[in-house]
Image (cartoon, rainbow, N blue to C red; front, side, top):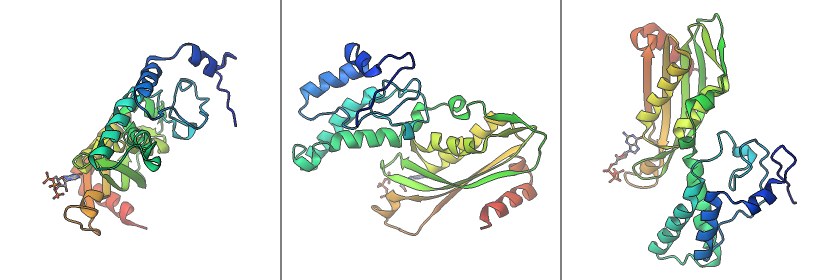
Length: 257
Ligand SMILES: Nc1nc2c(ncn2[C@@H]2O[C@H](COP(=O)(O)OP(=O)(O)OP(=O)(O)O)[C@@H](O)[C@H]2O)c(=O)[nH]1
């Protein structure tokens, strides 16, 4: 199915792009000529989101940030994966692997898409004045991240609590903050703290608590090979750190089914 992408002024953006390629695409095209495999997307682009018209690898389902700033990295990354395949003794030219370097590069960009995001964008002004000072908890937020030591995934769930001080946060924004920091090369301890600090910056509450339970594939599939171990990390700020009762209430809510 052919897809026409308009820039909102009635102009066909694909034609515009053909005439006037952005630098990242020019680089991609020249690199493609030098390399034997095709790095251009094979599926029609569906983005109608303003600012994403030039996007050559995002679909709308993945769009939760500004136009990618790291798309220009794709050629180098693809080439690196091609070299990696060769280093493994594989033939990057064999049919099953032809598109693998490009796919792997795109996957890695997705796994690290949090580098493209800022707190301001993620919050999208969804901070609301509200005379509410009782605990808010969003728990069991799925998290997928990449261990910075082995470049292997770790995954798990994140629970966030805060005690508002006249400001509350759009609930989905807590999960988006988790996405922004987990989609980077990480260690679980830093991820936990970054989430807590971001919530504090967003709404200056009386306190923030974050607990993450993670499974590290670098401990499962390789190395020590412990398949059932879980890593639990927490950051307690403000009243959650100072007041044991508040902390206990949060931990009880997080542990209840
Ligand atoms: N603290 C912390 N350590 C992590 C995290 N992810 C991976 N690691 C650890 O990073 C360490 C790297 O240790 P090294 O001895 O340098 O590397 P290694 O030989 O691959 O270690 P093993 O995993 O023990 O085989 C390992 O102990 C990993 O378990 C994390 O999120 N937090």
